[in-house]
Image 1 (cartoon, one colour):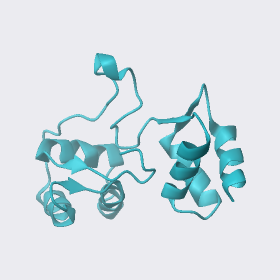
Image 2 (cartoon, one colour):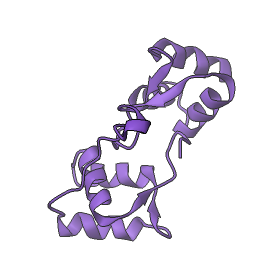
Image 3 (cartoon, rainbow, N blue to C red):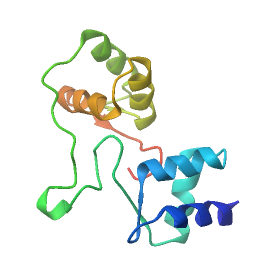
Length: 131
């Protein structure tokens, strides 16, 4: 199976990087959990994941603080705030939970990430195992 994962991911890679969305597409295509794709890529390749769908990494140079595109939301709907806080464990909410809440409220993932940022909640763990 690892060979299938790597073959599929390598087809999506550009300049040594694989977009989060492409890694998730491979997981769906192979009927795997995203973490399995992440593990295979991290163990067997030099590829890096980029363009996090929550805007948390992969958009520019970290040394220049341009790696994130997530912003602090100016408006936080009460129902979304309540749903997010209900899924917090410790001081963090999983990437998967953020995606589920976005789906539940028909809200863009990046929009929910902006709300998470405003609430001071950390996102962890990543579905691909990046953090």
